[in-house]
Length: 119
Image (cartoon, rainbow, N blue to C red; front, side):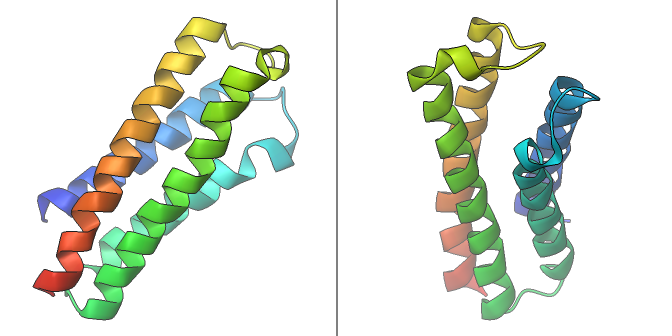
């Protein structure tokens, strides 16, 4: 399995784990569903990229783009609306986690654009 596919699956697992830890029994489905959809998109793209084609590489880029968009919104929610952090989320720890997630998602997005030219 290529490093890019492994990174996508590991990132998806971390996003899922973080969201489950934060939301377990505390938050409505609408508040965590986006992170689960990001994880599904990344894992699906990683599995399909087993045989690289331009379309499958584009799917991986789209999955990373979706991750950036979802985390971008979450990132600025934490900065602009700190009163909405919710249960189990100390401001500094959650902000650090979301900042790291955003940085990794942006790196994954840029790295995935190379897949399109290689496929």
